[in-house]
Length: 105
Image (cartoon, rainbow, N blue to C red; front, side, top):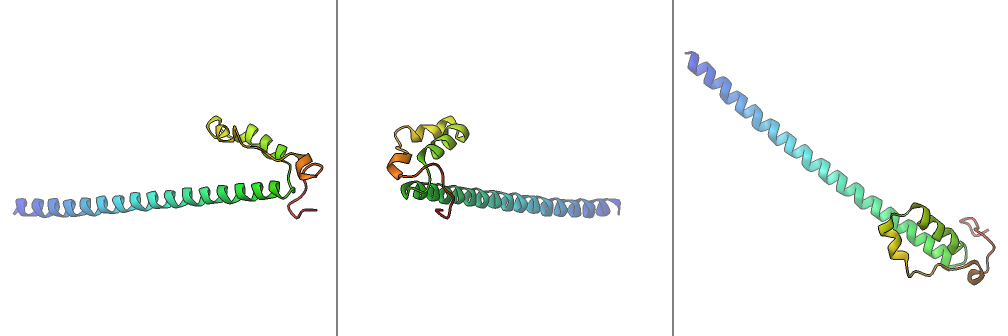
């Protein structure tokens, strides 16, 4: 009689452990998916922001010196290297005096 009770408890414990493992696995998968989506969104934001800065510079709305300073102060050494041969527009080329606001005023 006692062995039957112990066996049932053991089987119940095993089933619960399997459910626990399955839930933990599902949680880990969902967390991984969420992190990947967050990284993708972050990357997209960076691309859009960079594109907007480049367009503003090419249209003479923003000095290249401003963008160069941002890179020098805030970019990692690895990322700075990709701008080694990049030509930032100068205020003379863009015919502007300093940085103007985003509306072009």
